[in-house]
Length: 237
Picture (cartoon, rainbow, N blue to C red):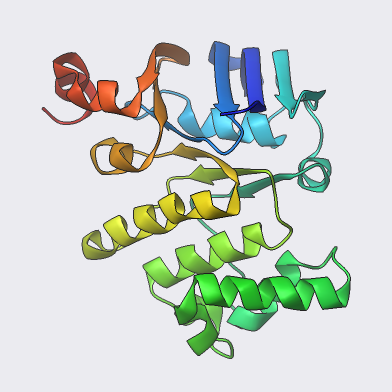
């Protein structure tokens, strides 16, 4: 890990008078894959939305490669190298796979966009077979692959993933995590929010346990997997 890709310091956020996050400190190194997990209602999705500018932080700072991006609009975050794949509604269902990919590269020159699309269908071969198919007719796993591919087209430095296993058949979940792990070859840093922590931890470098809007523990993925306390409280025993 040669530097810091994404960092939150003292981050607080919520919805109106309802505060959800209380002083979150979090770091993702360059090329590092980090998991955030914890019980329902811990504030995981609010955290990722605050990092991406979908929820305005009320205090604290977010930096991207050392640049202060706190509270910037999502479109500005994208322009500075951050990508976000939400848990639901992450593809345009009435559009074809090809059209979804083209939207992902809308800000790029046509030649670069086309090159990146071809690189993505090489990385996710099933998308090449489904180019003309409406995205809404894809399986849950295929939709996640499309959402990932579209987010990667602009070559972001940091990728935020909110529950990539959501809506995916159990037999495909491991495949999704393997695909995310395989993104290491691209150099992109990944921050993943995931309820299925037991299955996700083997595919990341470090993890944060979030509970009641605060970081309760941070350690290597291996240490978190081996912790009897973590297993009992957060991994289902």
